[in-house]
Amino acid sequence: MHPNPAFRGTETEESLTFARARGFGMLAASVADQAPLISHVPFLLAEDGKSADLHLVRSNPMVRALHTGGVARLAVSGPDSYVSPDWYEVADQVPTWNYVAVHLTGRLQALPQEDLPALLDRLSAHFEAALTPKTPWTREKMQGDSFERMLRMIVPFRLIIEDVQSTWKLGQNKPAEVRLAAAQHMAAYGFGSEARELAALMQSPFADV
Picture 1 (cartoon, rainbow, N blue to C red):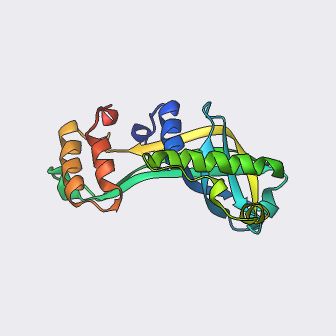
Picture 2: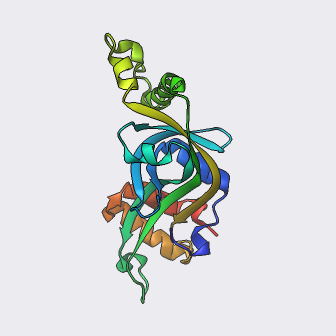
């Protein structure tokens, strides 16, 4: 993440709220003499922000490497967009990329397999709630032993969070009028992921320093 302190002053609780709402991230872990292991996973962040529950496919190499515990990092990405120097409407600027990211670092612990059904129920309930007024999906809709067969293929884990780091790169190092000009252009022409959402953050009091 960007080391500039101007982009890293967000309160931990704000970053945890963002990560909790996002609910999807890139889990990374290092194993001696191997390339870093990376998995893209949905997760549930505890209300106190001290742990995140998730599951991995049993055949994932990360399961074998970390079943006895190990250091891992869950990187949660938010909106991002390219920023053209012209959008600032002032001279002597350079291209950059604005973004939001939160890193949750800690120890990954395997949970008892019998905890898996409840974890999956909580995961689906959490995400289905965002689809209101749709009637929530539940596993009771599955037929026969489909759910039990699926359980044998995945393993539950809990990340015990020891450190929270975040970057909210919204142009806080620019004068307000310059940042707002860039945000307006980004809302109209930006590309990346959810550029309009990022532009809204750049225009909000959240970006003021």
